[in-house]
Image (cartoon, rainbow, N blue to C red):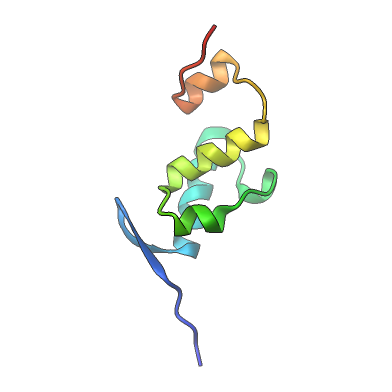
Length: 84
């Protein structure tokens, strides 16, 4: 018997976890040229179940990876404000 994956509703429509992760990886690749397997572990499943948009999850995972104050360049890439 084949199990079906739960779908969660996002701005782009309902996504399975696999589809959502593909979107997260796409955003990470766009930002830094890497995927989620290339950065530190982050709780992607909880973010998915909480309804976090893939682009937001990618940025949050990347910020957790950096775990440091953002440089102005990184902030600009992420679209974040940073005090200079």
